[in-house]
Image (cartoon, rainbow, N blue to C red):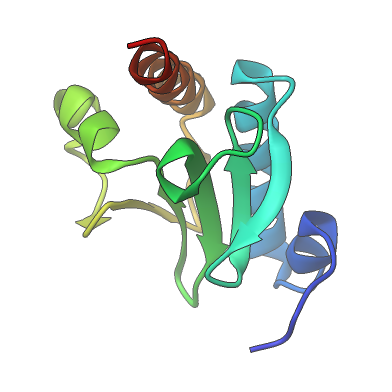
Length: 124
């Protein structure tokens, strides 16, 4: 697996459709949390939702042959179970077809929810 220096480098290395969908995910994440910090986790783009965010405090995205995926944390998937029912899911991930637009409003809501959960855990 290539080692990318930036998330934009990772996105630019993907096919046209993968790149477009990843840009949509990235834009939605930053709409929800403008001060998210770009990083990598497990070799895929990750966005720390809080300063020095560990893996559970990040949202990850990735490109695959027939879809792009987002890893918002299992509690977020459970919280938005009904809205996500039309999308294929894996362990801790949601898969979006390359042939359909990303549900950006839903992604924004999910990322805001996850950040609020992280902040409430940090403030205990």
